[in-house]
Image (tube, rainbow over all chains, first blue to last red; front, side, top):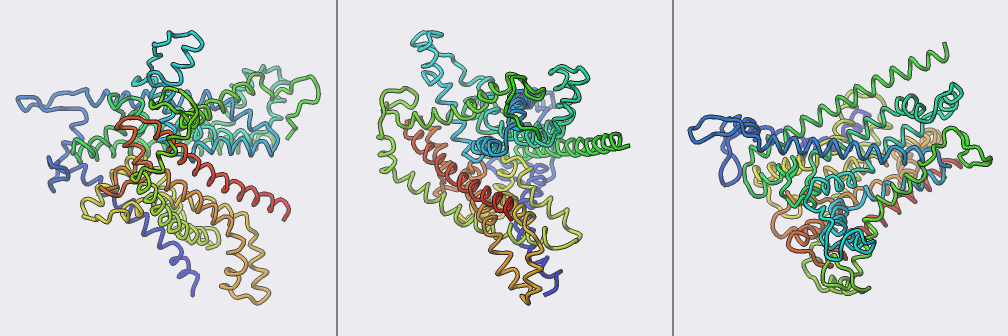
Length: 303
Length: 275
């Protein structure tokens, strides 16, 4: 058999599977977002952009389109929560990633493994753990009343708030922030820090002017890996937000589970997809820039 | 790299005060919720969140719950079809990508394989739902198996490709020098050496399939509930401590499988260091 044949034989199953069951459905979804909704679920085969218009505008009694901020509020909430979760994850993950990267090899491997374990466990179950912790009369309340911070029958009452969703999001995706951060911190040459210190930089300046610029690909990569799934999150807003504080992911789910407005759900999903593409482009640009930066840096040291 | 063990009293400049403590806090944040959940699964109280006494009763109750049994069996059936299918495809693809020489569709294939990781899960979920609904494909568990196979491929692919890249191609050349044809070299040299990598890929695909919730929730029809979907309905309809028990079991399955994967791959690393 020729090498060309072998290659085709090896790649064809993957091409067909992902092509038919992933690209196909995404194309069909894009088409559905441009069709007219059928009240009973499904679609009419008629071209219609109203699903995209519906994101920002509504028809009033006189059949005039007017601005409707209901979905814009959900979009804004999703962005704010996703940004907040990304920032918090960076804040929590940065020192931990740095500390792990400076450990001896065997301990490093173990600690990285301990970060990946939560990533491989069920997200629903991990989020549900926070229901037990934050819920009325739950773990937090019991600890709180034990420490006399709150009365015996009082509650800290964080459930069904944006704060609860934020905690759930950070908890869900924290490993995705730390792993790329760790990867770029591990590659960093510690002698640069010594050189910086010799030039009278204090520790804060070392972080700001050496560690942060050198680990930028990890910071950006981790931020995107956290931001994107946060934006489309469904479990955290559903369990910890009580299904009342909707995010984009839950809005999409709702259109298919109860509202039965497929084109609108598909339009929101297309919006999420567009954001992912933008994020990936930002990432690619940052990586390219960093490569140039490192190259010129290397030339500067060797030249 | 300098050893971080401090022998002198002086703190090296790269050792930031407080980062160790923050890291302890970081790991506590990751693990305390899981430990709370596990602890509460042994709670004798009828209320999921109020602690009374240690008891096995919710685990005993699981034994009697037929719905959970059928959901667990469904999960296993799906994973035992989707994970091997994905692993076989990922192995073939990895062989071509690493050993296939230069060819034009390489970048395209690499992108295609990572696509399921890039697209948000909820988007994949509704796209697959629309796909099956409009084409009227209604095959119960087979729908779920098809959907799972797709997103299992990249997870199976990554460790297999890594194992292949770490393998010395000289070994295959040596086998061919000793008059093995290409198939024999593959069968007696490449495949045995690649087996730990393939096992790792299978393990990760299996875990990802067992744990998947959102895509299964959207794609599953009536009668084909998997364990995570069943847990979700338990949480929705009123939380009893039984949820904690079944959640703990699901966690345990993932942790065990991922630990086996880690041991396999660290054995691989040691093998490399020696060889």
